[in-house]
Picture 1: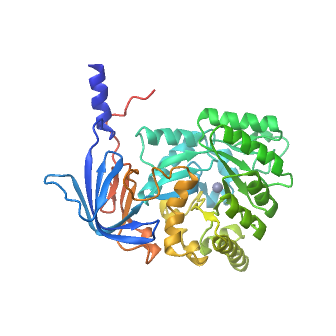
Picture 2: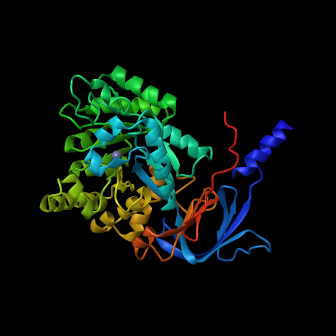
Picture 3: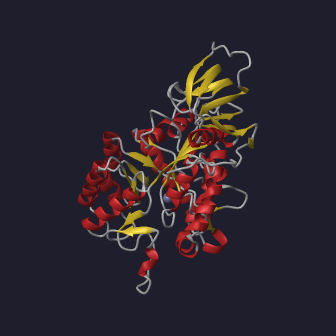
Length: 432
Ligand SMILES: [Zn+2]
Protein backbone atom coordinates (compact mmCIF):
# COMPACT_ATOMS: atom_id res chain seq x y z
CA UNK A 1 0.00 0.00 0.00
CA UNK A 2 2.78 2.37 0.93
CA UNK A 3 4.48 1.62 -2.34
CA UNK A 4 1.34 2.22 -4.34
CA UNK A 5 0.89 5.55 -2.59
CA UNK A 6 4.47 6.55 -3.39
CA UNK A 7 3.92 5.59 -7.02
CA UNK A 8 0.83 7.77 -7.16
CA UNK A 9 2.73 10.66 -5.60
CA UNK A 10 5.54 10.32 -8.09
CA UNK A 11 3.12 10.39 -11.00
CA UNK A 12 1.63 13.63 -9.66
CA UNK A 13 4.90 15.59 -9.79
CA UNK A 14 5.53 15.06 -13.46
CA UNK A 15 7.84 12.09 -13.39
CA UNK A 16 5.37 9.44 -14.49
CA UNK A 17 6.21 5.79 -14.05
CA UNK A 18 4.88 5.13 -17.53
CA UNK A 19 6.24 7.56 -20.06
CA UNK A 20 3.64 9.99 -21.24
CA UNK A 21 3.42 10.68 -24.99
CA UNK A 22 3.17 14.24 -26.27
CA UNK A 23 3.16 15.39 -29.89
CA UNK A 24 4.31 18.76 -31.18
CA UNK A 25 3.34 20.11 -34.58
CA UNK A 26 6.08 22.63 -35.49
CA UNK A 27 6.18 25.20 -38.28
CA UNK A 28 9.92 24.63 -38.37
CA UNK A 29 12.78 23.13 -36.38
CA UNK A 30 16.25 24.65 -36.38
CA UNK A 31 18.97 22.08 -37.07
CA UNK A 32 21.73 23.93 -35.22
CA UNK A 33 24.45 21.55 -36.37
CA UNK A 34 23.68 22.09 -40.07
CA UNK A 35 22.64 25.70 -39.58
CA UNK A 36 19.41 25.09 -41.48
CA UNK A 37 15.65 25.08 -40.95
CA UNK A 38 13.59 21.91 -41.30
CA UNK A 39 10.04 22.90 -42.23
CA UNK A 40 6.75 21.44 -40.99
CA UNK A 41 8.04 18.91 -38.51
CA UNK A 42 6.17 16.66 -36.13
CA UNK A 43 7.92 15.65 -32.90
CA UNK A 44 6.88 12.76 -30.70
CA UNK A 45 7.99 12.98 -27.08
CA UNK A 46 7.96 10.00 -24.73
CA UNK A 47 8.49 11.05 -21.13
CA UNK A 48 11.63 13.19 -20.96
CA UNK A 49 12.97 12.43 -24.42
CA UNK A 50 12.36 12.94 -28.12
CA UNK A 51 11.21 9.60 -29.56
CA UNK A 52 10.64 10.54 -33.19
CA UNK A 53 10.75 13.53 -35.53
CA UNK A 54 9.90 14.05 -39.19
CA UNK A 55 7.70 15.76 -41.74
CA UNK A 56 5.58 12.67 -42.36
CA UNK A 57 4.90 11.40 -38.82
CA UNK A 58 1.19 10.70 -38.46
CA UNK A 59 -0.40 11.88 -35.23
CA UNK A 60 -2.95 9.31 -33.98
CA UNK A 61 -6.51 10.41 -33.20
CA UNK A 62 -7.04 11.54 -29.62
CA UNK A 63 -3.32 12.19 -29.08
CA UNK A 64 -2.03 14.94 -26.78
CA UNK A 65 -0.90 17.58 -29.33
CA UNK A 66 0.78 20.94 -28.83
CA UNK A 67 0.20 23.09 -31.88
CA UNK A 68 3.26 25.22 -32.69
CA UNK A 69 2.63 25.20 -36.44
CA UNK A 70 3.07 28.98 -36.57
CA UNK A 71 6.35 28.89 -34.63
CA UNK A 72 9.97 27.83 -35.03
CA UNK A 73 11.41 25.35 -32.54
CA UNK A 74 15.00 25.17 -31.43
CA UNK A 75 16.90 23.37 -28.71
CA UNK A 76 16.75 24.90 -25.22
CA UNK A 77 19.46 27.52 -24.75
CA UNK A 78 22.48 26.98 -22.51
CA UNK A 79 23.84 29.76 -20.26
CA UNK A 80 27.33 28.64 -19.25
CA UNK A 81 28.22 31.39 -16.77
CA UNK A 82 25.66 32.70 -14.34
CA UNK A 83 25.27 33.18 -10.60
CA UNK A 84 21.72 32.40 -9.45
CA UNK A 85 22.36 33.36 -5.83
CA UNK A 86 24.01 36.70 -6.53
CA UNK A 87 21.80 39.71 -7.23
CA UNK A 88 23.70 42.93 -6.62
CA UNK A 89 21.80 46.17 -6.21
CA UNK A 90 23.44 48.94 -8.14
CA UNK A 91 22.20 51.88 -6.06
CA UNK A 92 22.94 50.18 -2.77
CA UNK A 93 26.10 48.21 -3.62
CA UNK A 94 27.60 50.36 -6.42
CA UNK A 95 27.99 47.17 -8.44
CA UNK A 96 30.38 45.78 -5.84
CA UNK A 97 29.37 42.21 -5.18
CA UNK A 98 31.63 42.22 -2.12
CA UNK A 99 28.96 44.28 -0.34
CA UNK A 100 26.11 41.99 -1.41
CA UNK A 101 28.06 38.95 -0.35
CA UNK A 102 28.82 40.33 3.07
CA UNK A 103 25.44 41.75 4.03
CA UNK A 104 23.04 39.15 2.65
CA UNK A 105 22.51 35.66 4.03
CA UNK A 106 22.76 32.49 1.96
CA UNK A 107 19.08 31.87 2.67
CA UNK A 108 17.96 35.20 1.27
CA UNK A 109 20.25 34.86 -1.73
CA UNK A 110 18.94 31.37 -2.45
CA UNK A 111 15.39 32.75 -2.40
CA UNK A 112 16.47 35.39 -4.92
CA UNK A 113 17.99 32.49 -6.87
CA UNK A 114 14.55 30.87 -7.12
CA UNK A 115 13.31 33.91 -9.03
CA UNK A 116 16.46 34.05 -11.16
CA UNK A 117 16.18 30.34 -12.04
CA UNK A 118 12.56 30.67 -13.08
CA UNK A 119 13.34 33.79 -15.09
CA UNK A 120 16.16 32.12 -17.04
CA UNK A 121 13.90 29.16 -17.85
CA UNK A 122 11.11 31.51 -18.90
CA UNK A 123 13.50 33.16 -21.37
CA UNK A 124 14.54 29.87 -22.96
CA UNK A 125 17.56 28.76 -20.93
CA UNK A 126 16.94 25.09 -20.11
CA UNK A 127 20.51 24.41 -18.89
CA UNK A 128 22.92 26.57 -16.92
CA UNK A 129 26.33 26.44 -15.28
CA UNK A 130 26.26 28.30 -11.98
CA UNK A 131 29.79 29.55 -11.35
CA UNK A 132 29.58 30.28 -7.64
CA UNK A 133 29.33 33.31 -5.38
CA UNK A 134 26.39 31.53 -3.82
CA UNK A 135 27.19 32.08 -0.14
CA UNK A 136 27.44 28.82 1.75
CA UNK A 137 26.60 26.40 -1.09
CA UNK A 138 23.31 28.09 -2.00
CA UNK A 139 23.86 26.93 -5.60
CA UNK A 140 23.65 23.27 -4.56
CA UNK A 141 20.42 23.88 -2.68
CA UNK A 142 18.91 25.52 -5.75
CA UNK A 143 20.01 22.63 -7.93
CA UNK A 144 18.44 20.08 -5.60
CA UNK A 145 15.21 22.06 -5.31
CA UNK A 146 14.92 22.16 -9.13
CA UNK A 147 15.75 18.47 -9.52
CA UNK A 148 13.15 17.46 -6.97
CA UNK A 149 10.41 19.66 -8.37
CA UNK A 150 10.07 22.25 -5.60
CA UNK A 151 10.81 25.12 -7.95
CA UNK A 152 10.99 25.56 -11.74
CA UNK A 153 14.41 26.14 -13.24
CA UNK A 154 17.01 25.02 -15.76
CA UNK A 155 19.07 21.84 -15.38
CA UNK A 156 22.18 22.95 -13.52
CA UNK A 157 25.85 22.33 -12.97
CA UNK A 158 27.41 23.99 -9.97
CA UNK A 159 30.89 24.82 -8.64
CA UNK A 160 30.10 25.19 -4.93
CA UNK A 161 32.57 27.58 -3.34
CA UNK A 162 35.08 29.26 -5.62
CA UNK A 163 38.71 28.33 -4.91
CA UNK A 164 41.12 31.26 -4.77
CA UNK A 165 44.38 32.46 -3.21
CA UNK A 166 44.24 34.55 -0.03
CA UNK A 167 41.58 37.23 -0.25
CA UNK A 168 39.37 35.49 -2.80
CA UNK A 169 38.14 38.28 -5.04
CA UNK A 170 37.73 40.70 -2.16
CA UNK A 171 39.91 43.53 -0.86
CA UNK A 172 40.06 42.40 2.77
CA UNK A 173 41.42 44.30 5.74
CA UNK A 174 43.49 42.62 8.47
CA UNK A 175 40.84 42.76 11.18
CA UNK A 176 38.27 40.82 9.14
CA UNK A 177 39.97 38.17 7.03
CA UNK A 178 37.01 35.91 7.79
CA UNK A 179 34.80 37.96 5.44
CA UNK A 180 36.21 35.91 2.58
CA UNK A 181 34.08 33.00 3.82
CA UNK A 182 31.72 31.49 2.91
CA UNK A 183 32.11 32.99 -0.56
CA UNK A 184 35.54 31.47 -1.26
CA UNK A 185 37.68 28.56 -0.19
CA UNK A 186 41.11 30.07 0.31
CA UNK A 187 43.86 27.77 -0.94
CA UNK A 188 47.43 29.01 -1.05
CA UNK A 189 49.27 25.71 -0.80
CA UNK A 190 48.71 22.48 -2.69
CA UNK A 191 47.44 20.80 0.46
CA UNK A 192 44.87 23.56 0.77
CA UNK A 193 43.95 23.23 -2.91
CA UNK A 194 43.48 19.49 -2.56
CA UNK A 195 41.32 19.95 0.51
CA UNK A 196 39.22 22.65 -1.17
CA UNK A 197 38.64 20.46 -4.23
CA UNK A 198 37.66 17.52 -2.03
CA UNK A 199 35.31 19.68 0.06
CA UNK A 200 33.47 21.00 -3.00
CA UNK A 201 33.13 17.58 -4.59
CA UNK A 202 32.02 16.05 -1.30
CA UNK A 203 29.18 18.56 -0.99
CA UNK A 204 28.11 17.83 -4.56
CA UNK A 205 29.74 20.39 -6.85
CA UNK A 206 29.75 19.28 -10.49
CA UNK A 207 32.94 21.09 -11.46
CA UNK A 208 35.66 23.20 -9.87
CA UNK A 209 36.25 26.91 -10.37
CA UNK A 210 39.55 28.56 -9.58
CA UNK A 211 40.34 32.28 -9.62
CA UNK A 212 43.74 32.38 -11.28
CA UNK A 213 44.98 35.92 -11.48
CA UNK A 214 42.98 38.59 -9.67
CA UNK A 215 45.97 39.71 -7.59
CA UNK A 216 49.69 40.13 -8.15
CA UNK A 217 50.20 36.70 -6.59
CA UNK A 218 48.84 34.13 -9.01
CA UNK A 219 48.64 30.42 -9.38
CA UNK A 220 51.44 29.13 -11.56
CA UNK A 221 50.99 26.87 -14.55
CA UNK A 222 52.37 24.02 -12.37
CA UNK A 223 49.83 24.74 -9.58
CA UNK A 224 46.99 24.64 -12.09
CA UNK A 225 48.26 21.50 -13.85
CA UNK A 226 48.48 19.85 -10.45
CA UNK A 227 44.87 20.88 -9.70
CA UNK A 228 43.68 19.67 -13.13
CA UNK A 229 45.23 16.28 -12.39
CA UNK A 230 43.40 16.07 -9.05
CA UNK A 231 40.12 17.25 -10.61
CA UNK A 232 40.39 14.93 -13.64
CA UNK A 233 40.98 11.91 -11.41
CA UNK A 234 37.74 12.79 -9.65
CA UNK A 235 35.99 12.72 -13.03
CA UNK A 236 35.30 16.39 -13.51
CA UNK A 237 36.61 19.62 -15.01
CA UNK A 238 38.21 22.94 -14.19
CA UNK A 239 36.73 26.33 -15.04
CA UNK A 240 39.22 29.18 -14.61
CA UNK A 241 38.50 32.82 -13.94
CA UNK A 242 41.26 34.64 -15.83
CA UNK A 243 41.72 38.30 -16.69
CA UNK A 244 45.38 38.63 -17.77
CA UNK A 245 47.45 37.37 -20.70
CA UNK A 246 49.63 35.30 -18.36
CA UNK A 247 46.72 33.85 -16.38
CA UNK A 248 44.97 32.73 -19.57
CA UNK A 249 48.15 31.13 -20.92
CA UNK A 250 48.84 29.27 -17.68
CA UNK A 251 45.27 27.97 -17.50
CA UNK A 252 45.27 26.71 -21.09
CA UNK A 253 48.67 25.05 -20.78
CA UNK A 254 47.57 23.41 -17.53
CA UNK A 255 44.54 21.82 -19.23
CA UNK A 256 41.61 23.88 -17.91
CA UNK A 257 38.32 23.08 -19.65
CA UNK A 258 37.33 26.73 -19.94
CA UNK A 259 38.57 30.27 -19.59
CA UNK A 260 35.94 32.54 -18.02
CA UNK A 261 36.14 36.22 -19.07
CA UNK A 262 39.69 36.06 -20.49
CA UNK A 263 39.71 39.76 -21.34
CA UNK A 264 43.30 39.47 -22.58
CA UNK A 265 44.24 36.75 -25.05
CA UNK A 266 47.32 36.77 -27.26
CA UNK A 267 47.63 34.84 -30.52
CA UNK A 268 49.76 32.11 -28.97
CA UNK A 269 47.07 31.42 -26.35
CA UNK A 270 44.30 31.42 -28.97
CA UNK A 271 46.27 28.87 -31.00
CA UNK A 272 46.76 26.66 -27.93
CA UNK A 273 43.04 26.90 -27.14
CA UNK A 274 42.22 25.63 -30.64
CA UNK A 275 44.71 22.76 -30.32
CA UNK A 276 43.55 21.72 -26.86
CA UNK A 277 39.84 22.39 -27.35
CA UNK A 278 39.74 24.90 -24.48
CA UNK A 279 36.45 26.77 -24.31
CA UNK A 280 36.16 30.54 -24.12
CA UNK A 281 33.20 31.65 -22.00
CA UNK A 282 33.90 35.30 -22.67
CA UNK A 283 31.03 36.78 -20.62
CA UNK A 284 30.76 39.59 -23.14
CA UNK A 285 28.21 42.31 -22.55
CA UNK A 286 26.36 44.75 -24.81
CA UNK A 287 27.80 48.19 -25.50
CA UNK A 288 25.29 49.97 -23.27
CA UNK A 289 26.60 47.91 -20.38
CA UNK A 290 30.23 48.90 -20.68
CA UNK A 291 29.73 52.10 -18.65
CA UNK A 292 29.08 49.92 -15.66
CA UNK A 293 32.68 48.71 -15.88
CA UNK A 294 34.21 52.03 -16.89
CA UNK A 295 33.03 54.42 -14.19
CA UNK A 296 30.20 55.68 -16.47
CA UNK A 297 32.68 57.59 -18.62
CA UNK A 298 31.27 57.25 -22.16
CA UNK A 299 34.61 57.47 -23.96
CA UNK A 300 36.30 54.95 -21.69
CA UNK A 301 33.26 52.69 -21.93
CA UNK A 302 33.38 52.67 -25.73
CA UNK A 303 37.13 51.95 -25.73
CA UNK A 304 36.63 49.09 -23.29
CA UNK A 305 33.78 47.65 -25.34
CA UNK A 306 35.71 47.88 -28.63
CA UNK A 307 38.74 46.19 -27.08
CA UNK A 308 36.73 43.30 -25.69
CA UNK A 309 34.74 42.78 -28.86
CA UNK A 310 38.00 42.77 -30.86
CA UNK A 311 39.32 39.91 -28.71
CA UNK A 312 36.05 37.96 -29.12
CA UNK A 313 36.32 38.43 -32.88
CA UNK A 314 39.95 37.23 -32.86
CA UNK A 315 38.98 34.13 -30.85
CA UNK A 316 36.07 33.42 -33.23
CA UNK A 317 38.20 33.87 -36.33
CA UNK A 318 40.95 31.67 -34.88
CA UNK A 319 38.40 28.87 -34.45
CA UNK A 320 38.30 28.78 -30.63
CA UNK A 321 35.31 26.94 -29.18
CA UNK A 322 33.01 29.51 -27.60
CA UNK A 323 30.12 28.96 -25.18
CA UNK A 324 27.54 31.58 -24.22
CA UNK A 325 27.73 33.03 -20.71
CA UNK A 326 26.43 36.48 -19.81
CA UNK A 327 27.62 36.54 -16.18
CA UNK A 328 24.67 38.72 -15.19
CA UNK A 329 24.77 39.34 -11.46
CA UNK A 330 22.94 42.63 -11.03
CA UNK A 331 19.34 43.68 -10.78
CA UNK A 332 18.71 46.21 -13.50
CA UNK A 333 15.62 48.39 -13.72
CA UNK A 334 13.14 47.04 -16.23
CA UNK A 335 14.83 43.66 -16.58
CA UNK A 336 14.71 40.23 -15.02
CA UNK A 337 17.68 37.86 -14.88
CA UNK A 338 16.39 36.10 -17.98
CA UNK A 339 15.52 39.14 -20.11
CA UNK A 340 18.84 40.80 -19.25
CA UNK A 341 20.81 37.62 -20.01
CA UNK A 342 19.25 37.08 -23.44
CA UNK A 343 19.79 40.75 -24.35
CA UNK A 344 23.55 40.09 -24.20
CA UNK A 345 23.45 38.32 -27.60
CA UNK A 346 23.99 41.69 -29.29
CA UNK A 347 27.71 41.57 -28.48
CA UNK A 348 28.11 38.45 -30.64
CA UNK A 349 26.73 40.18 -33.71
CA UNK A 350 29.08 43.10 -33.02
CA UNK A 351 32.01 40.63 -33.08
CA UNK A 352 30.96 39.43 -36.53
CA UNK A 353 29.61 36.10 -35.33
CA UNK A 354 26.98 34.74 -37.74
CA UNK A 355 23.49 33.78 -36.53
CA UNK A 356 24.22 30.08 -37.24
CA UNK A 357 27.33 30.19 -35.10
CA UNK A 358 25.61 32.17 -32.35
CA UNK A 359 22.97 29.42 -32.15
CA UNK A 360 25.72 26.77 -31.96
CA UNK A 361 27.47 28.79 -29.23
CA UNK A 362 24.19 28.86 -27.27
CA UNK A 363 23.32 25.17 -27.73
CA UNK A 364 25.72 22.46 -28.91
CA UNK A 365 28.84 24.21 -27.66
CA UNK A 366 27.38 24.67 -24.19
CA UNK A 367 26.27 21.04 -24.15
CA UNK A 368 29.79 19.91 -25.09
CA UNK A 369 31.36 22.07 -22.39
CA UNK A 370 28.99 20.53 -19.84
CA UNK A 371 29.55 16.97 -21.16
CA UNK A 372 25.83 16.85 -21.83
CA UNK A 373 26.07 16.40 -25.60
CA UNK A 374 24.25 13.05 -25.47
CA UNK A 375 21.23 14.68 -23.81
CA UNK A 376 21.16 18.30 -24.88
CA UNK A 377 22.17 20.86 -27.48
CA UNK A 378 20.16 19.68 -30.50
CA UNK A 379 16.60 18.68 -31.34
CA UNK A 380 17.31 15.03 -32.01
CA UNK A 381 15.78 11.63 -31.37
CA UNK A 382 17.03 10.19 -28.08
CA UNK A 383 17.89 13.54 -26.49
CA UNK A 384 16.01 15.37 -23.76
CA UNK A 385 12.93 17.20 -25.00
CA UNK A 386 14.40 20.60 -24.07
CA UNK A 387 12.61 22.71 -26.66
CA UNK A 388 11.81 26.38 -27.05
CA UNK A 389 9.76 28.22 -29.67
CA UNK A 390 10.06 31.65 -31.24
CA UNK A 391 7.90 33.41 -33.83
CA UNK A 392 10.48 33.93 -36.59
CA UNK A 393 13.60 32.24 -37.94
CA UNK A 394 16.59 32.98 -35.63
CA UNK A 395 18.96 31.90 -38.43
CA UNK A 396 17.86 35.04 -40.26
CA UNK A 397 17.72 37.31 -37.22
CA UNK A 398 18.83 36.11 -33.77
CA UNK A 399 16.72 38.85 -32.16
CA UNK A 400 13.90 36.29 -32.49
CA UNK A 401 15.42 34.78 -29.33
CA UNK A 402 14.42 37.87 -27.35
CA UNK A 403 10.82 36.67 -27.36
CA UNK A 404 10.46 33.00 -26.48
CA UNK A 405 6.80 31.92 -26.45
CA UNK A 406 7.14 28.26 -25.47
CA UNK A 407 9.50 26.38 -23.16
CA UNK A 408 9.67 22.64 -22.54
CA UNK A 409 12.31 20.98 -20.37
CA UNK A 410 12.62 17.20 -20.29
CA UNK A 411 9.17 16.85 -21.82
CA UNK A 412 7.41 19.08 -19.27
CA UNK A 413 5.85 22.34 -20.47
CA UNK A 414 6.86 25.46 -18.50
CA UNK A 415 5.72 28.19 -20.86
CA UNK A 416 2.98 28.15 -23.48
CA UNK A 417 1.47 30.95 -25.59
CA UNK A 418 3.92 33.35 -23.94
CA UNK A 419 2.67 32.55 -20.44
CA UNK A 420 4.54 30.73 -17.68
CA UNK A 421 2.33 27.75 -16.82
CA UNK A 422 4.28 25.89 -14.14
CA UNK A 423 2.42 25.59 -10.86
CA UNK A 424 3.60 24.65 -7.42
CA UNK A 425 2.89 20.93 -7.13
CA UNK A 426 0.46 19.82 -4.43
CA UNK A 427 2.74 16.98 -3.43
CA UNK A 428 6.50 16.71 -3.74
CA UNK A 429 8.15 13.37 -4.26
CA UNK A 430 9.76 11.90 -1.14
CA UNK A 431 13.54 12.09 -1.46
CA UNK A 432 16.38 10.24 0.22
ZN1 LIG B 1 30.93 35.37 -13.00
